[in-house]
Length: 260
Image (tube, rainbow, N blue to C red; front, top):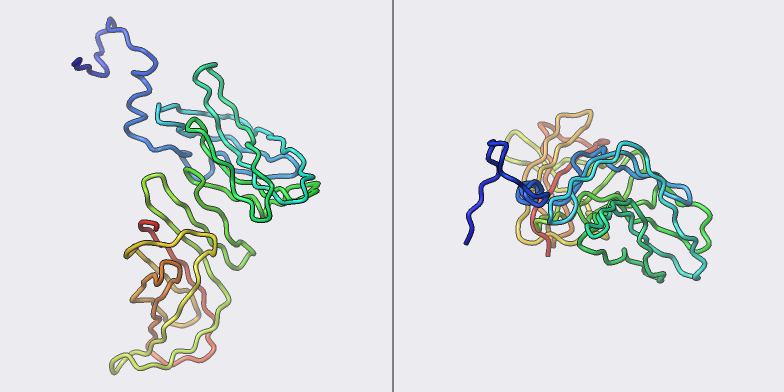
């Protein structure tokens, strides 16, 4: 068995490309380096912004310094389709590309299966006979066929991500809900229980995930006893120093745990 050290600064030891890639493969999981890397916008092609990512187990670091336009094949199948937008590293031909992987048209389309040398950036909903891609149907990912913007209408924005380390993460901003707080909590505070359904296409959480909820309103409110019930329903209690009726409030949440 050989024991090797990376790297001796002697100026004489010869190292291979795989030696320089090895630390990245150990230290980093696949994915983009920051939230602004490889963002997606669409017409009948999709535009992928500049960015930096790590692709495949070999430790390939991919850097793009300009926007790349990726054409989407027309869909005249009679059904809708989900195509994958990926970074592909072809180590045999030493070629890296950002490309579309066509999905299978279906009444319930799913993203296509990918090769191990492809990093998914997004899934694109290609409607039957569509002449353009709706930006609101582009599902952007974190580090795999992972998660997407479930809803973003200017008042509510919810996202989820299924990470390659087996964790599931969900976060969002929920607005324009009304609340009545009338239950006594001890002799000083009042409270009411509240539930919110998490994104419908998201996998269910297993066990007991980490949950954090922060309320925003014109009154003095705070959340406590945050849990996820049945893997898909956010439950928490809201406490106030006084009774309130029909109070408009907003809240943000962040949940992270294992998926079923």
